[in-house]
Length: 144
Image (cartoon, rainbow, N blue to C red; front, side, top):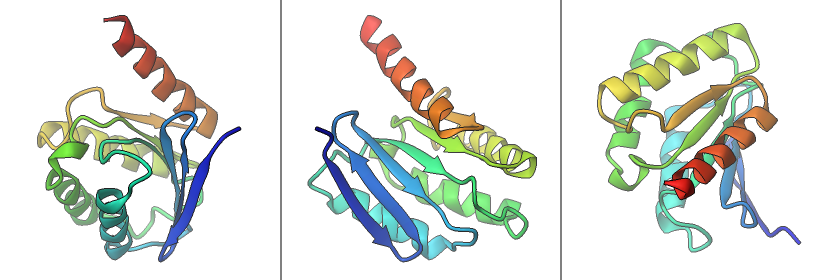
Protein backbone atom coordinates (compact mmCIF):
# COMPACT_ATOMS: atom_id res chain seq x y z
CA UNK A 1 0.00 0.00 0.00
CA UNK A 2 1.33 3.42 -0.94
CA UNK A 3 1.69 5.94 1.85
CA UNK A 4 1.09 9.57 0.97
CA UNK A 5 1.54 12.78 2.90
CA UNK A 6 -0.63 15.43 1.28
CA UNK A 7 -0.65 19.11 2.15
CA UNK A 8 -1.20 22.47 0.59
CA UNK A 9 1.26 25.32 1.00
CA UNK A 10 -0.76 28.36 0.07
CA UNK A 11 -1.49 27.63 -3.58
CA UNK A 12 0.95 24.75 -4.13
CA UNK A 13 -0.25 21.27 -3.31
CA UNK A 14 2.12 18.42 -2.63
CA UNK A 15 2.09 14.81 -1.62
CA UNK A 16 4.85 12.48 -0.64
CA UNK A 17 4.84 9.06 -2.26
CA UNK A 18 6.70 7.07 0.40
CA UNK A 19 6.71 3.87 -1.65
CA UNK A 20 8.73 5.49 -4.43
CA UNK A 21 10.43 8.20 -2.35
CA UNK A 22 9.16 11.01 -4.56
CA UNK A 23 7.59 14.33 -3.60
CA UNK A 24 4.92 15.45 -6.11
CA UNK A 25 4.28 19.20 -6.24
CA UNK A 26 1.43 20.65 -8.28
CA UNK A 27 1.14 24.33 -9.11
CA UNK A 28 -2.04 26.18 -9.98
CA UNK A 29 -2.22 28.52 -12.95
CA UNK A 30 -0.54 31.31 -10.97
CA UNK A 31 1.72 31.27 -7.90
CA UNK A 32 4.32 33.55 -6.42
CA UNK A 33 7.76 33.25 -4.86
CA UNK A 34 6.36 33.15 -1.32
CA UNK A 35 4.81 29.79 -2.26
CA UNK A 36 8.26 28.47 -3.18
CA UNK A 37 9.67 29.75 0.12
CA UNK A 38 6.83 28.08 2.03
CA UNK A 39 7.54 24.80 0.27
CA UNK A 40 11.27 25.04 1.06
CA UNK A 41 10.37 25.56 4.73
CA UNK A 42 8.12 22.49 4.55
CA UNK A 43 10.96 20.46 3.01
CA UNK A 44 13.34 21.53 5.78
CA UNK A 45 10.88 20.70 8.56
CA UNK A 46 9.33 17.48 7.20
CA UNK A 47 9.84 14.27 9.12
CA UNK A 48 8.34 12.20 6.29
CA UNK A 49 11.29 12.51 3.92
CA UNK A 50 14.82 13.85 3.65
CA UNK A 51 15.63 17.37 2.54
CA UNK A 52 17.12 16.04 -0.70
CA UNK A 53 13.95 14.17 -1.70
CA UNK A 54 13.50 13.65 -5.44
CA UNK A 55 10.70 15.91 -6.66
CA UNK A 56 8.33 16.09 -9.59
CA UNK A 57 6.99 19.60 -10.22
CA UNK A 58 3.77 19.42 -12.22
CA UNK A 59 3.71 22.79 -13.95
CA UNK A 60 1.30 21.69 -16.66
CA UNK A 61 -1.43 24.14 -15.57
CA UNK A 62 0.92 27.05 -14.85
CA UNK A 63 0.56 30.24 -16.86
CA UNK A 64 4.17 31.00 -17.82
CA UNK A 65 3.26 34.37 -19.35
CA UNK A 66 4.08 36.44 -16.23
CA UNK A 67 7.29 34.53 -15.45
CA UNK A 68 10.44 36.35 -16.47
CA UNK A 69 14.20 35.89 -16.16
CA UNK A 70 14.31 37.78 -12.84
CA UNK A 71 11.78 35.41 -11.27
CA UNK A 72 13.70 32.39 -12.56
CA UNK A 73 16.95 33.79 -11.14
CA UNK A 74 15.24 34.32 -7.78
CA UNK A 75 13.99 30.71 -7.74
CA UNK A 76 17.49 29.49 -8.56
CA UNK A 77 18.92 31.65 -5.79
CA UNK A 78 16.44 30.25 -3.25
CA UNK A 79 17.26 26.68 -4.26
CA UNK A 80 21.02 27.31 -4.06
CA UNK A 81 20.66 28.57 -0.48
CA UNK A 82 19.77 25.03 0.56
CA UNK A 83 22.88 22.94 -0.07
CA UNK A 84 21.01 19.67 0.55
CA UNK A 85 18.89 20.38 -2.55
CA UNK A 86 21.96 20.75 -4.84
CA UNK A 87 22.25 17.00 -5.44
CA UNK A 88 18.54 16.19 -5.42
CA UNK A 89 16.93 15.26 -8.70
CA UNK A 90 13.91 17.19 -9.91
CA UNK A 91 11.71 16.68 -12.91
CA UNK A 92 9.66 19.57 -14.27
CA UNK A 93 6.46 18.74 -16.17
CA UNK A 94 5.59 21.45 -18.71
CA UNK A 95 2.21 21.43 -20.41
CA UNK A 96 2.98 23.93 -23.17
CA UNK A 97 5.79 24.81 -25.53
CA UNK A 98 6.35 28.10 -23.68
CA UNK A 99 6.46 26.24 -20.36
CA UNK A 100 8.88 23.67 -21.76
CA UNK A 101 11.20 26.43 -22.97
CA UNK A 102 11.03 28.31 -19.65
CA UNK A 103 11.76 25.11 -17.74
CA UNK A 104 14.75 24.40 -19.97
CA UNK A 105 15.96 27.95 -19.27
CA UNK A 106 15.62 27.24 -15.52
CA UNK A 107 17.55 23.98 -15.97
CA UNK A 108 20.36 25.59 -17.98
CA UNK A 109 20.69 28.61 -15.69
CA UNK A 110 20.64 26.40 -12.56
CA UNK A 111 23.49 24.29 -13.87
CA UNK A 112 25.46 27.32 -15.12
CA UNK A 113 25.16 29.09 -11.76
CA UNK A 114 26.16 25.94 -9.85
CA UNK A 115 22.84 25.81 -7.98
CA UNK A 116 22.44 22.20 -9.05
CA UNK A 117 24.81 19.57 -10.36
CA UNK A 118 24.54 18.88 -14.10
CA UNK A 119 22.02 16.19 -14.96
CA UNK A 120 19.93 16.65 -11.81
CA UNK A 121 17.06 18.47 -13.56
CA UNK A 122 14.92 17.02 -16.33
CA UNK A 123 12.16 18.73 -18.27
CA UNK A 124 9.32 16.43 -19.31
CA UNK A 125 6.06 16.73 -21.23
CA UNK A 126 4.13 14.26 -19.03
CA UNK A 127 4.04 13.15 -15.41
CA UNK A 128 4.79 9.60 -16.51
CA UNK A 129 7.90 10.72 -18.39
CA UNK A 130 9.05 12.65 -15.30
CA UNK A 131 8.44 9.64 -13.03
CA UNK A 132 10.21 7.26 -15.42
CA UNK A 133 13.22 9.60 -15.63
CA UNK A 134 13.58 9.79 -11.84
CA UNK A 135 13.36 6.02 -11.48
CA UNK A 136 15.84 5.43 -14.33
CA UNK A 137 18.32 7.90 -12.79
CA UNK A 138 18.01 6.17 -9.44
CA UNK A 139 18.56 2.76 -11.07
CA UNK A 140 21.56 4.07 -13.00
CA UNK A 141 23.10 5.48 -9.80
CA UNK A 142 22.66 2.12 -8.05
CA UNK A 143 24.40 0.34 -10.95
CA UNK A 144 27.57 2.41 -10.46
